Length: 244
Image 1 (cartoon, rainbow, N blue to C red):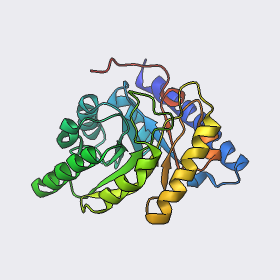
Image 2: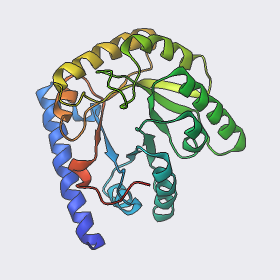
Image 3: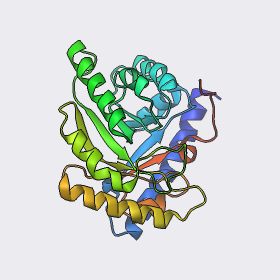
């Protein structure tokens, strides 16, 4: 597909997704600017992210460190004057912390104190080495079904994990993230997340972000207070790359 055709395709998809978000906000009595659109570019080339940036997108997400590392570097080469923020939304092993803090502005999948400690150490070292200029924004990934292999801490573990992060100077706690359970009712899951977020904000007023909702359930997430929807398929279509 030519660049012009791909740009047109992405522009139409972006318009449709933004229309969905706008309608969901109106139905929930919210303002569209309250909900950020995060383009999940996993398995898609950096050229797609560059075209989305041309269309006004500034927030991008990846779920595998190895794929993201090269893609972010290529994006910078393609659009050196463009400011973009990159989110890590996939499960992250502690031994990848040093690598991920070199490109990620936000890690949304923090689900244990050991991972938070590894990210804090890696961020401190990256700051000292001049590899990044600011602390790392993090969200707590909450498991809403305790499914093995999908990541997330138990809801009852959120307060202690949040307190631990607040004791570090290299991580900034921004809120919570969750994925609706497979085969479950999104409204129930996102209502639960809303309660967890509200409790977290009582202790940590700055932790206002709620990253929830994807291509298939963003309307439900917006209805329950999501401030960021993570959209891949509805925006970019079917997979284009094979993840390394």
